Image 1 (spheres, helix red, strand yellow):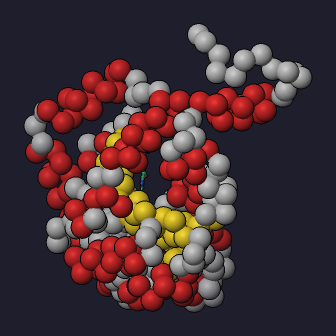
Image 2 (image 1 turned 180 degrees about the vertical axis):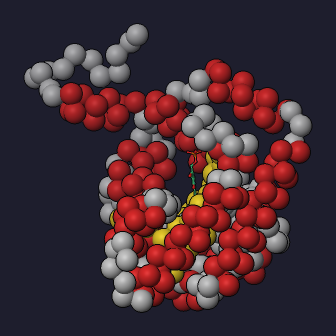
Image 3 (image 1 turned 45 degrees about the horizontal axis):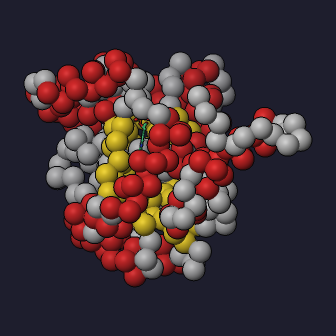
Length: 321
Ligand SMILES: Cc1ncc(COP(=O)(O)O)c(C=O)c1O
């Protein structure tokens, strides 16, 4: 293999090698690539709160600033333009959208997608549309931001959710921006080279094989969503409609505990695992995420135990009583 850096002059540490190699490998003439290698230092990215935690990790890894826009349970976790208007600055570069959403199950209606895209155009932002749950929508159709403005949008997708191929590490990105597509291809080669052959074959089989499993799983998740929401409503613990993905957020503020403490106690006392809202940002600190990705009887038993614990703590009972 050839070297991109040449012999080191003064025995640099491995970290310095990596930085040198990175600098020389990526074509700096292209403004988009230059931004990437310069670490997008100080550039701001608007991302959802609560939202999938990896968005923030990716932004911080590039030395950008993660600016979280709030998603309120009272608004069924759909973004509000006024919140974004408050947070946008001349340094804002990217708006990250995730519908259907992890962790809330929210699906953005057409008019919301339209106004989000108008907002992005107004401030000349890239839009990163994470659409990995696009096939798991229960009530209305999934509305993709992509066709609204393909040249400013990168749509992210994965085989993980549609084909239950979590762990196979096969995903893809699409953009209508030719210059950006070229840069993305250049960046992905030094970063990940390519997807391993067996995983590519599995993805090919998923795409070319019968598609009934996609609708079957969506219907199964819908039935679980209906059953869980009905149970939570019967205990007066639920106030919004999760319309996609396979999660919902439960407000546990009645217990007086924050999401993390509640989740740890639930595991300890009731042997039920939920994800604390704090894993997804600050806004959902009094919430926990329930995943529908388990067998209905187990799921309903877990939700029942969760309700039981909220009631027990709210009533002031102590552990074991
Ligand atoms: C919102 C969201 N985006 C992206 C991913 C990534 O999926 P994968 O890395 O398995 O393709 C996940 C996985 O949980 C997710 O919830």
